[in-house]
Image (cartoon, rainbow, N blue to C red; front, side):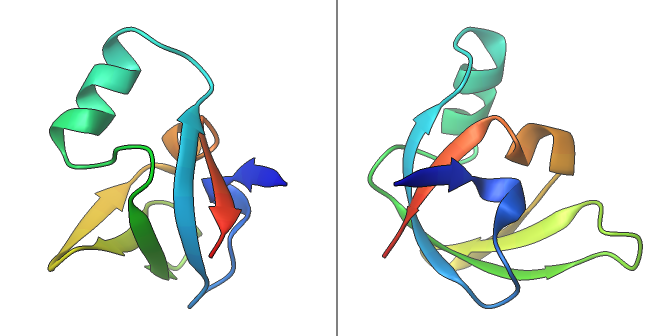
Length: 76
């Protein structure tokens, strides 16, 4: 079962499954290292919930919640 990355709870481990839309968004996501099959951890969110900090490999990435809704993940 896949869910949007935006629905993860703090500390949850997930694997990127797919992108809801292709084109510029998917290219930009891949450019920062978000590729299908990659394991991520949702670390924390800013006080108002946006942006979200996710950890992948050995670095952290901040991603807007609207963009996180376009990335489908499955629980690891």
